[in-house]
Structures are given as C-alpha cells and as structure tokens.
Image (cartoon, rainbow, N blue to C red; front, side, top):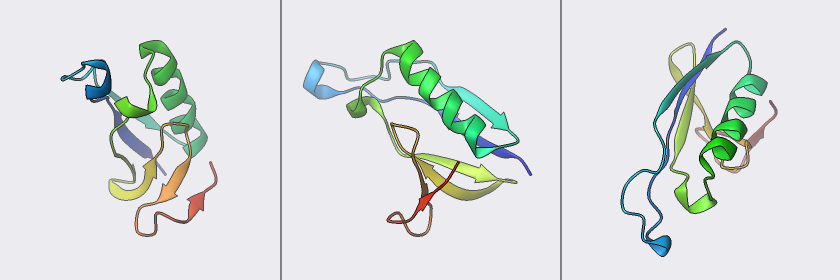
Amino acid sequence: MSYTCKLRSVGNPDYGQYAPVSVPLGVETESLAGITRMAKRYVADWNLGGGNWPTIIVKRDGKPFAVLGYNGTLWDVKDRSREIEA
C-alpha cells in the first residue's frame, strides 16, 4: 500500500501574503504515520501557520483517501467529521 500527497501552502492575506510561501513537495510513503511526520516537518521547515494550509488530499494507491490537516490530523475524505488514525 502506498500513500501520496503534495504538500504546499497558500498565502495568508491577514499577513500581506498573496502567493504560496513554500515550494511544493511530493510525498510518498508506505504509512499514514510517514505522511503526518513529513507534513509536520514541512510546516516547521517553512514556518507555516494555519492560514497558510490549503486542503491537502492524501491518496492511497492513487485514490483519494484522507484530508490532511495543518496539525497532521487525518480526516476521512468522504466524511470529514471522521478522524483516521495514522
């Protein structure tokens, strides 16, 4: 099983940012824990805030599986009220 996503950011107009503040990064791992680890590192490396975090879809074997939150939380792509454990 393979999990992939594209980590990226958006500008936060509250801080005068109108363009992405990071370079997009494609991630592929064998586990959801790997996705969340990489996301947290990406946030730290680029000093991102919650207002910089767009909707990021995690795919499992190429199909949409989860939504990745700013804090590394994963939510079911079909039911965003249901958390998925990494």
